[in-house]
Image (cartoon, rainbow, N blue to C red):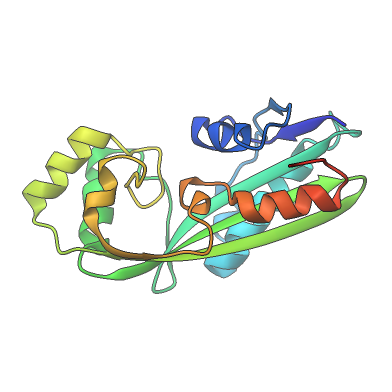
Length: 191
């Protein structure tokens, strides 16, 4: 069976490699901004984007099993994505510091015309952080490609007081526990 990850994210690629499966990575080409104006909320948005990313690759790869995924930060209903600039990252971390937020990670597996989805919710409580410490952190990790402006797998772990998660791999962008279950349902042999 051909397996495709509808992403070019190095983080997700490294996570999927842990399952020992052969796969290819292809960008979905999805215009995510078109979905962000729908007002469907953080969970709905993450699930929709993960599903749409997988579906974008069905036409070019109709016989493949396709994995789509997406992640957003939910701060009291406000959706935070990737900052893309240092200034936006400072703004995001300033909003998050001293508070709890949810990291919403969705995965979709398209297999033989069926769609299987899962949404993982992680609650993170960030320490109170002075602005100069935020700037030092951003200079060290450069997390401009990460929603919420932090990398827990690097120095970003020092920003947090508490993390509550059923699957720590979801924090990096691909919930492997749920994905393993979904792929086994599709007939993949995973030890």
